[in-house]
Every structure is written in C-alpha cells, then in structure tokens.
Amino acid sequence: MLSHDAVLAGWIASGACAFIVLFFYDAPYGKFFSSAWGAKVNGSLGWLAQELPSPVALWIGITRGSRVFSEFASSKSEMFYVHILAAVWCAHYLNRAVVYPLTRTLGETSASTVASAVAFNVINGVLVGAEMAHATRMPSHTRLIVGAALMVVGVWINITSESALRRRRASKTVPASERFGKYVMPRGGLFDHVVMPHYLGEFIEWCGFATLARAKSAWAFAFWTACNLYPRAVANKRWYAAKFPRYPKSIAAMFPLLP
Image 1 (tube, rainbow, N blue to C red):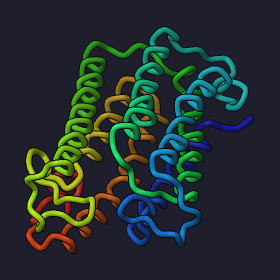
Image 2 (cartoon, helix red, strand yellow):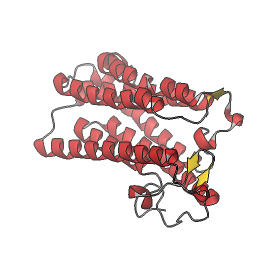
Image 3 (cartoon, rainbow, N blue to C red):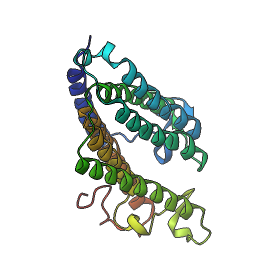
Image 4 (tube, rainbow, N blue to C red):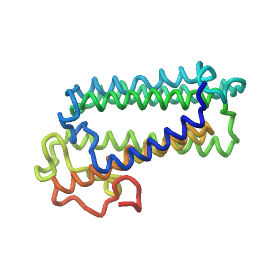
C-alpha cells in the first residue's frame, strides 16, 4: 500500500515545480493556444473532458482510499459531513464542467492541456477524497462559519467576475481601442484592482473548502490552485499590457499587493 503522506509530499513538490515552469511556458489554451503543444481540441469539449473526472476521482478516493493508502486502513470519518463536502465539491464541478462551457465560447485548447488537467484532477480528487473519508471530523462552529464564508465569498467573486467579463465582451459599447479579436480589456469592479479576480475567487473558494475539510490534501489543492493560476494571471497581465496601451500596469495580477 502507498503512504498518503509521502504521495502528498510529492504532490506539493510538483505544484511548486509547476509554479516555476509556468512563468516560462504559458499554458496552451485560450489566448495562449499553440499547436506546438499537440493536437487542437475544441475548447468546450476539452473543458468538459478535463473537469468531469474530478468528482469521479473524489468518490473513488472516499470509497476506495483505505485500499490504496496505508494510513487509512482502520480510521473512519463522520461520513454524513464528508458527504456534504463531497456534494459541495460536485456542485463546483457541475458548474465548471457543464454550465461554464455551455454559457460561453471557449478558445481552442490542446490535447496535452486536456490530458494534464485530467491527470491533475484524478490524482487530486483521489488524495482529497481518501483523506476526507478517513481523517475528517466535524469542525467547530467558528471553523464552520469561517470556512463556509470563505467558500461563499470565493464562489461569488469567481462567478460574478466571469459574468462581468462575458457581458463586456458581448457589449456593443466597448470602443475598438479596448478590443482585440474576441477579447476585451477588462474594466470595472474588481477588474480595476486585480487582472484576474475570478482566479482569486477560485483560490479563496478552495481555501474555504480546506478550512471545512480539515485535510492536508485539501490545503495542498488550494496551494496547487495558486501555483497554477498565479503565473497564468501574470501572463494575462503581460498580454493585456501588450495589446491595450491604456491598460493600467499598476493593477495586481491575482493577489492584491503582489505584482
């Protein structure tokens, strides 16, 4: 059997490596798509394919984790609470895998991007599910309130920011100087402070989930979220500054007070 802690340590180290690499290589999807990374994949279908494995992997971890990881052979969590967390997880991925690609036109992606995302979601889901099923207990009222509040705030920031950007792209009043193909210079609300507020919202959401789950692997997921999204936000900031001369260079990429 595998050691969950050992696998998790390697998983965290992989996130740190990805963080460094992504400052040198832009993830090839959307505005950064490149055929050099493999076959072209329809953006909506690719997004569906890469996001759907996550809830499946979580349930595999919950139901089969004790057969994979030695630490969990005899321990058991409060399963009613674990099932609530699993339902929250599935609701997130129902939105990301189905609602998100159906409500907007997504740019092309590459087969390598889809494959790497599938691998990430499978490993991440199994790690989190296994630990939740065998190490998660009902938190204190304070932790429950803080975790739930973080999740609600994160989801609100994520969804409202994406909706605002989608409306701006569809608006007929955006001047030509603030358009580049199907993309627009983001403005208004949190976009006046952070280049990618929807990325920030997703990070906050998973910090809230980790607070509720009280699981090391859930915090590793929040860490991976930052490692993946922050370099992407920096790349987007650089892209907007190159395409739109009037774009304010003082705006933070993803986290306030950071470049």
